Image (cartoon, rainbow over all chains, first blue to last red; front, side):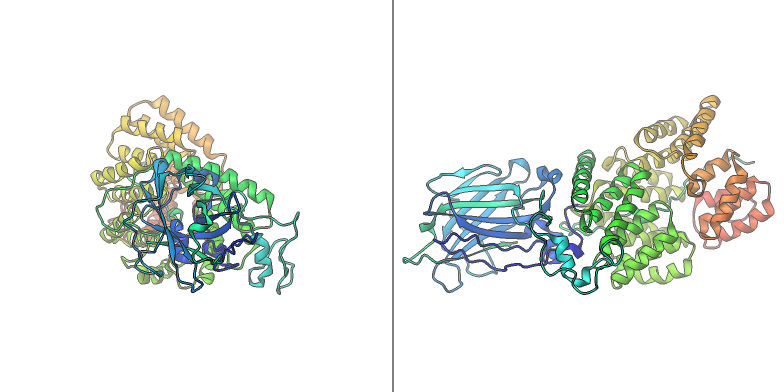
Length: 242
Length: 398
C-alpha cells in the first residue's frame, strides 16, 4: 500500500522550482507528490519537496530534500532510501541557472543499518540533468541514517524518516476542480461547475498529509560554503536520478 | 449413492488476484526469490487499517482514504479468508465512489474485486463495466470483465476478450485470468504454461504482497490437482506454503491433495491447520472426510455436524459451491441444495453451475435429468477430475 491510485495523484505543482533568497525570512517551498506514473510506481525516486530556510544561526542555511511520499506509520520501519539512486542538491551562485556547486547524497545497504554518504558542496562532476556520476572524493559526512551527523559549526546531516511537513486539503482541491465532483452521496448535489474556489479556512480544512511520513535528507551548513563573489543570492534545486 | 472424493474443486476466485501495479525491478527468470515475511506484512496491514480508519473518521467526505481502507480490507480478506472483510471492502469502496466518482476508477476496481469475492457476480460485472468505461484501453479492466463473464457462464463474451489478451507480455493478473479461461476451454497445457509465466513475473516483482505471490503457486497446484497431476500439485503447493505458511486456502488445497492421495492422516493434519488459520467451514467438511478415510466414524460425523453448523451462519444463497458439493457427497440437505443449484443457474449457467445442478439431481435420484445437465457442464471439454468423476458416476463418456 505504498502507492496512491493514479486518480489521487498530487499533480499539483504548487510551486515548481525553488529559489532560496538568503537573508530574507522566506520559507520557499515546492510540492509535487506522485506527479508521474513512473515515480508513482517507484516511490523511492519520487521527490516530494525541496525546502531551503535559515539555519540555527543567521549565517547558516538548512536544505531539505524529501522523497517517498505517503509513508504510513506502519510502513515507517521498513522504508529506506534506495542505494541505487543518486540524490543531489544543486546550487547556482552566479545567477545563470546552471549549478556551480552540488551535494551528492548516496546510500549504502538497506534496512536499519543503512549508511548515508554526503559529498560536497563541491564543483559538480557533471553539469546538467543527464549522465550524472558520483564524485570520487571522500564523503564530507557519512554515518547511519536516522542519526544527526557532522558538526554544529560545519556541515550537519540527517537522513531518515520525518513527518511530511507539506500540507494540503486534497479533498477540497477535488471540489475546486469540477470534473472531480462526486456524482452520488452528500456532495453530489453540488453544481457541476466548481463547487469551491478556494481551500477551506483554518479550522475547517483537513490536512490530507497529516500523519504521513517522508524520507528526508536534511543538510545544515554555513551559508558561505554556497555563495561566491559576494553574491548573497543563490538558486537551489534537487534531483534524484538513477 | 456413490461417494466421491473430489480430486480438485476449482475455486473461482481469480478476481482476488491483485491489481499488481508495481514496477518490475528484476527480470531474470531464475534469479533468487524474494524473501517473504507474511506475518510482518499482516501486522502492517492491520496497522494501516487502523491508520486509515482514523483518517476516514476525521474526513468522511473524502474519497482517497476510503479507497485505501477498502483495498486494505480486501487484502486482509485474502490473507485470512475472512468473509467479513470482503463486506467491509465493498462498503468502503462504495463510500469512496459516493464521495467522488470521477477520476476514481481504482475504487470501481476494488469494488468489483470485493463483490467477486462475495460471489456477487452480477453486481461485480456492473462495477467492472464502470471500470472499463473509465479505462477502456487497459487490459486489466477487460480481463476482469472477462473473468466475471466466465463466472456467469458467458463464454462467448469471454472468448472475445481473452482471445485478444492471450499474450505473454500481459501483466500477471491478466495472464492468470487468461489461464483460467484456457483451462475451462479444455486447453489445460496452455493454461498451465500461461499461469506459470504469470507466476514467474510475480515472483520477481517488488512490492507484491506475499499472499498474492503465494496465490499463483496455489493456483498452479489447484490446476495440477484438477488434472490429476498429484506430484506437480504437491510441488506447487509446497512453494505456496513456503511463502505463506498459514494461508487457509493453501492449507485447504493441501488437504484436498492428501485426500486425493488417500492419505487420511496427512489430510487431517492439513484440515486441522486450515481450521486454525481461517474461517472457511470447508475445513470441517474436509476434516470429516479425512476422519472417514481413517475409519474414525464418530469423529467424521462430529466434524460434519460442525461444518453444517458453520454454514448455517451464511445465507443459503451465498453458500459456496464446495460447501454444497460436500453436503451432496454426504447426502445431506439434498433438496435444499438442489433448489439452490437450480436457482443459481438462472444467473450463473457456467460449467460448475451445471455440474453442481447435475450432481444434486443425481443425489435426488433424478439421473436422467442429471445426465442432461451434466452434458452442459462437459460441452467445453474442461479437464477436471471432479467433472470426470461426476460424469463417470452418471455413466457419461469423457
